Image 1 (spheres, one colour):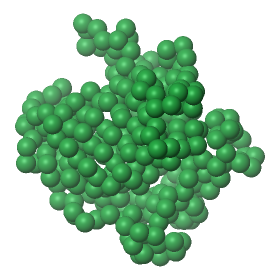
Image 2 (cartoon, helix red, strand yellow; image 1 turned 90 degrees about the vertical axis):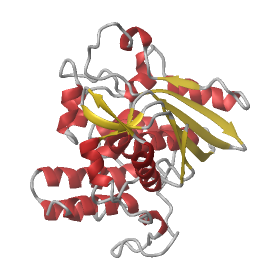
Image 3 (tube, one colour; image 1 turned 30 degrees about the vertical axis):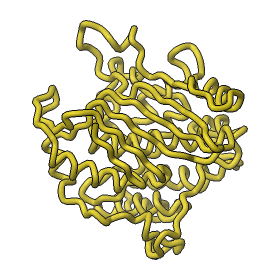
Image 4 (cartoon, one colour; image 1 turned 180 degrees about the vertical axis):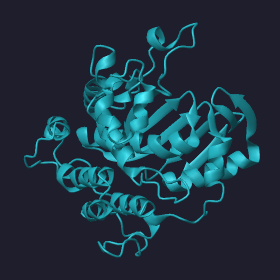
Length: 330
């Protein structure tokens, strides 16, 4: 097994690229040639809240990554809302209306129960519990003799456990594209879930472990990141100065997602429904709303306005990522 022990997603991507180029095996897949590890890979993040990926050559879409994470927390599977941030999402729908493998819907609705609420209950009521397992893979729906359907969950299970008042999480993945999935969107999705769950049970955020049974990169996309710089980590050189960006080593602490856990879920639904009332959880007003305004300005081809809205994002990491993403398209 390959072990990748990283502080955050930026370091994990760098370490994984170096390891894959050394040990990777080329295989033919239904999506083209890929380089894969010949054994499973375990990635650990000690600072999973440092979830934003900044590498210019990777060109990750910060708007889509964060909005999809909240779409998941809301338990949604409808295509229309999330397609606003990534039009390609509709290509993963079998019926043009919903996405079969949507993680959030599977967390909260798929099996006829809200698995996240059950997980919260277990973690609060059973000390040192080892049965808090959230499932995304449905063997009845997802496992058949026919290779049909456009989207089946790549992440299959999530396990939570508390030790020393700290919540840790292990995510199991059957097949993981390390460029677009593991060290891109998944690092945001799952770290947001971990922080959400920790807030719900009033615990510190612990370690996020990602077990990938098959970790791979497609040869054409691997070219984009093979020359990433080994010491490029803005989280270690971030500043509290709004205009100057990242300059003071180690001074940055990500803005908490949740201020008031008791009303967060209801406020999330309100925000997604475009209700503009004041929110007890400031992340909606101070991060998601200016980010959404920035994105819609970008779609309207008003890049000056998009940058102005992005500069109002109160989390410095997401602000930096959005401004840089826009500037690359100026």
